Image 1 (cartoon, one colour):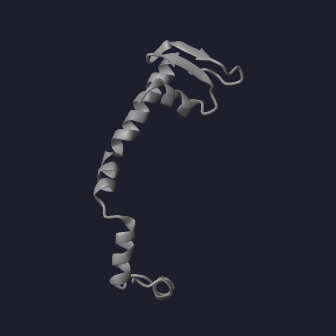
Image 2 (spheres, one colour):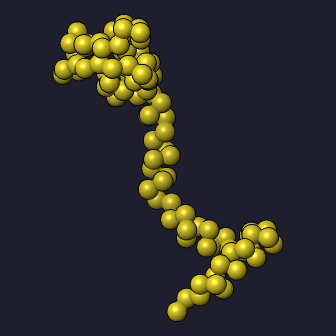
Length: 99
C-alpha cells in the first residue's frame, strides 16, 4: 500500500501529487476537498494493507481453481442444473455442435 492508494481511498475525487512516498511532498490541487492528515493517511495505509492481507486466501484459491467454464461444464454433465437451465444449455450445444 502507498500514499496514493490511501488518499484515493479517503478522498476519491482528490487531485494531488507527491514524491518518494513522502507525505511532506504532497501538493494538493483540490480546494474543495480536505487534505487528509499524515496520521489519517498512515492509518488508512495500515487498514488497506490489513484488508489486502486478509484476502490472501482468495487470491491463492483463484489461481488454483479450474477455469469457470470447466466448472460449469462439469456441473452440466453431472446433471446439477435445473431442468430449465439444462434445456437452455443443451439448446446452445445443439445449435453449435462440436465438429
